[in-house]
Length: 189
Image (cartoon, rainbow, N blue to C red; front, side, top):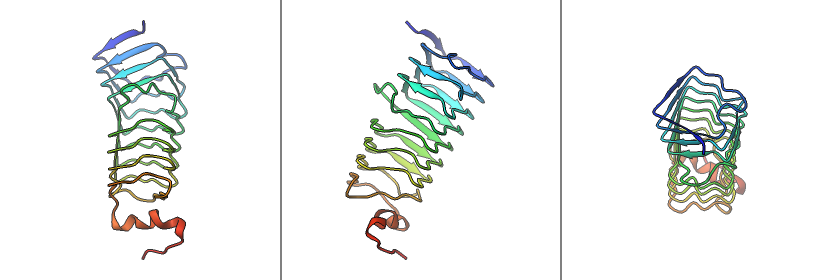
C-alpha cells in the first residue's frame, strides 16, 4: 500500500530521486517545488495542484495524474507516455511544456492555457475536446492523433496535416490556415 497524504501543502522543496515513490497525494498543493531529480514510480496524484514548480527531465513511470492542475510550471523534456492511464486528467495554465511527450495517451478534455508547447509529441493521442488557448505549438507533432472538437482557434505556429490527423469539428482561426496547408505548398496571405 502506498503511503497516503491528504490536504497537505508543500512549499520550496527540492525532491530527490526517490522522494515520492509509492506515495499517494490527494487534494495536496505543491508550490515552488523542484521535481527535476525525481524518478516518479507508483506515485498517485488526485485533485492536486502544482504552482511554480519545475519538472525538467523528471522520469515519470506508472504515476497517476487524476484531475491535476499545473500553474506557471516548467516541465521540459518529460515523457508522460508511461503514466497510469486510468482517469488521466491534467490541466496546464501558463506552463512551459517544450519537448514534452504525450505519445498515445487519452487526453480527452485536457486544457492548455497560455502555454509553450514547442516540439511536443501528441502522436497517436486522443485529444477529443481539448482546448489550446493562446498556445505556441511550434513543431508539435499531431500525426495519427484524434483531434476532433479541439479548439486551436487562439493558438499559433502549428503545422498539422489533416490527412494524418482526425480534425472533425476542430476550430481554427483564419490566420492559422497556413498551418493546415503547409504540406501542399499553398501560400496564404
